Length: 124
Image (tube, rainbow, N blue to C red; front, side, top):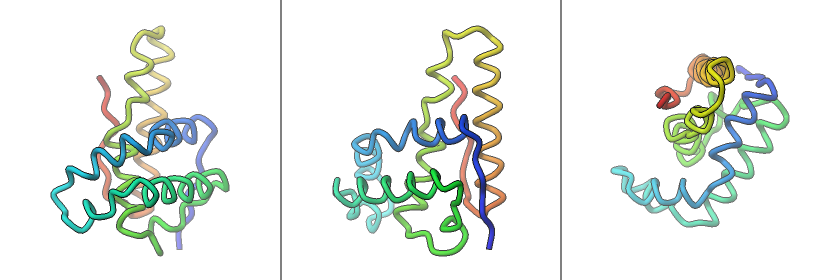
């Protein structure tokens, strides 16, 4: 069993997308996976986001490699691949933007090591 600990900045990145479950619902409704699309009911996504956030707050995402539901895995994947965290730093000084990119890469590395197949945080 693997646990993943996140720094405060990494938690900030993860919470950035979890804070907008409506956006996650919109993307989920368009999912090619019919089973996941059926789960795109606001309450389901809200509840899963709350549960993920609670686990992140405890610095533990054991569920990534043990008991993650398909919805939790999908949400975590979209939290990374649909993140606008780095884009929100696009007007910041280069050092601040570079720090945001490092945080994003660190989160991706940790989640992959924990067994989640996840793409990169968009850097635009």
